[in-house]
Length: 135
Image (cartoon, rainbow, N blue to C red; front, top):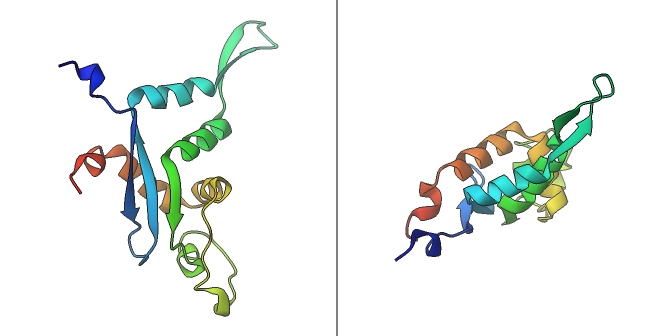
């Protein structure tokens, strides 16, 4: 038996977002290798105009885009009234129960603009136990 033959590169689990009944998010735990691949894609070497020497630059925007795309696989039940608790919005009262459909763009914007959502995702993703417990 070889450990390398048993390792999973990723695993997706559905989580209930706290305090938002019916709002479920599909999150993926990424292996260290998968995380490193994303990180490497965001590192670029540029020439410093003053010293004319190569310097490593990290593209934070690209990292967030690739990372969010890799870890958030979908959601259901994100009502606009729940969204108002995560970001500053102006939602008419008669639309509070409307749902924001999942898209990679919506997920990215939510991660960029909501500290609450970003922190919760980070906590869930960083705890391996969330992905290893039997259903």
